[in-house]
Image 1 (cartoon, rainbow, N blue to C red):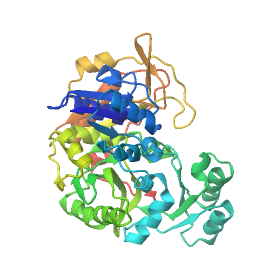
Image 2: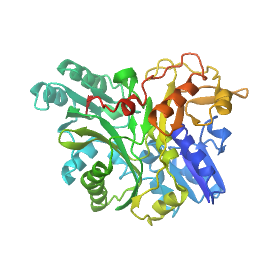
Image 3: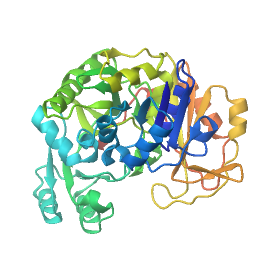
Image 4: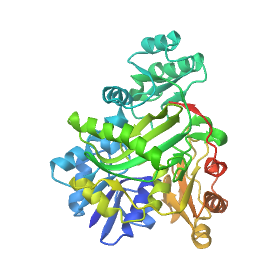
Amino acid sequence: MRILVIGAGAREHALARLLVREPGVDLVLAAPGNAGIARDVDTRPVDAANPDAVLALADEARIDLTVIGPEAPLAAGVADLFRARGRRLVGPTRAAARLETSKAFAKDFMARHGVPTARYHVARDADEALRVVRAGALGEAVVVKADGLAAGKGVVVAEDRAGAETAIRTAMIDRAFGGAGETVVVEERLTGPEVSFFVLAAGSSYVVLPGAQDHKRIFDDDRGPNTGGMGAFAPSPLVDAALGARIVREIVDPVLAGMAAEGTPFTGFLYCGLMLTAEGPKVIEFNARFGDPEAQVVLPLIDEPLAPLLWAAAAGELTSGACRVSPDRQVGVVLASRGYPGHVETGHPIGGLDRVAQECPDVQVFHAGVADRGGRLVTAGGRVLTVVGRGADFQTAIARAYDAVSRISFEGMQFRRDIGRKAVVGSQSPEPRA
């Protein structure tokens, strides 16, 4: 089998590294990939959001199966074109991907199909949004979400009414997120621990993958602004068999049935970002693809070949169930550039990667914002690396991850020092969010 992985981040690196080692896989090609991914598999430059260019590459490389990593190619309709040409691809159509690409659509969809989520109001101009906040029907402190894609940075958990009003003006008047903020969703704040629940779906059939917990905020103890993710651990200790069955029954089943009933059946990775409230699990957000950095800690736990599952999903022949899961624990720490999640510095040489490869056998390093300069890797983005430690327990996995982090260096390197702590202490802080 010849597989094309679309994307350029650590999630795509994790997918490519796993797939290239599986039996029956003859080639893995990453496009556009990055300089770190190129150390494991071939890469090709391509505009991942240009469906015609991606299809031309698949034709040229005689690709059997394409897997989309990030959201931009989904929003651009790459899956639509591939399916129209009879090519097997893992990823939803543009219409089905609206679960992620439009928060307003997702909220209205959940309301139509009885999926538990926070109370909300969709506002299409700033005056309307400000009136909603000032009326107080959703509470004194609310969450303001830009409707469209904003690289994980379009959500503000406001501490008070003034903060909510500032968030509305930033999105809708200052246009900090461009067209993504033309519409906003104002939600009540929910309280409880967060978990990420994943399935690989093909219409109404799906395979349940290990759950995870990520760390969205930039600083320790869940402080500071939201980011694309500063680390994750898996499996989530909170998702036992009973809770997993409830999530499937109350969220996964009605979502997939609703998508099919509305003429947009979902194929691909469905990410359910959940808050475990006193009333039960409620949806914070959906992603129409694997999460990042969650993929980096979930994929190593899958204890069976992934390629056949992806092939079956793309062919609409997936058998529902749960994948086999390793008993290991995985903890991933994101190393980011100075300034992230705002303006970042780039071009700094990255040291220590060879030491980690030689001295840390239970660690994997996945590359995101990196580039090659004269044969040496340098920083080229906000999130640079994800360092993943494996262990029989979370304490060991954490220790191994941070031991490897201590051997890596680049100017301005920042990272959280509490990734996985919640799993060890057994307490989950009730961070308000929606």
